[in-house]
Length: 261
Ligand SMILES: NC(=O)c1ccc[n+]([C@@H]2O[C@H](COP(=O)([O-])OP(=O)(O)OC[C@H]3O[C@@H](n4cnc5c(N)ncnc54)[C@H](OP(=O)(O)O)[C@@H]3O)[C@@H](O)[C@H]2O)c1
Image (tube, rainbow, N blue to C red; front, side, top):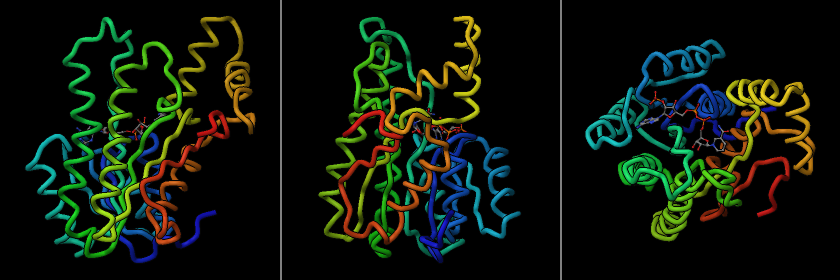
């Protein structure tokens, strides 16, 4: 399925976890990229890197907290020392947000969410602007279908992701003259292990099967199924690659047609 859209490119992925982060790394590597993996848990980075290397890919693992200036500066140094260039930066980091109604959400939880999602993404983009300008590279921000709805209890998450979108659009305008493109990918449901577990719990609660929960959820989309992590990751690979060379400031919704943006 993957073509060599990223041959000889260096792609930095921040917030590599077991879900979408892992898939973005493996799909970028399958498309020919050398992949720099960053998150706080080194053992997870090494697991994903081992998978890529077993398939013949090249990686660098740098444990980093993207809310920390020095950790991000170290990530830039290690990346340039190892590969000498950066062609794309993908900001994927995620921490489970407060799921309380906004009226009862602690302000510190909202601040933490904005600190990670918005300022973390900005810190990473600022730190990598110089090498990205040299390569006329791309930034991809991982957003969410929470942009498209206002369901109760998603308020804290929606505030952070909406601010991330606003920031991405301004960065596209400001960095465009240096040849840097900034785009967003907005997934909805992702058919990951996490969601499989959750549907199992919902099924138990309502006395139905997990397959029924899946189908009821999928029926709300045009394609009547839920996207696999690799399908989201391939949209990221496209926006990181030169195949999207005239696309900037845009959001690509990847949700099997659940929402039409
Ligand atoms: N999962 C979904 O259903 C879904 C739906 C729509 C959108 N999204 C978006 O897709 C993205 C990925 O979600 P996912 O659930 O699949 O996550 P994931 O890729 O499995 O993991 C994200 C990773 O971010 C890392 N992270 C958190 N705080 C960090 C920090 N301060 N510095 C560096 N790394 C940090 C965590 O690793 P460490 O703890 O090791 O740092 C975590 O494992 C997110 O932006 C999310 O909003 C997800």
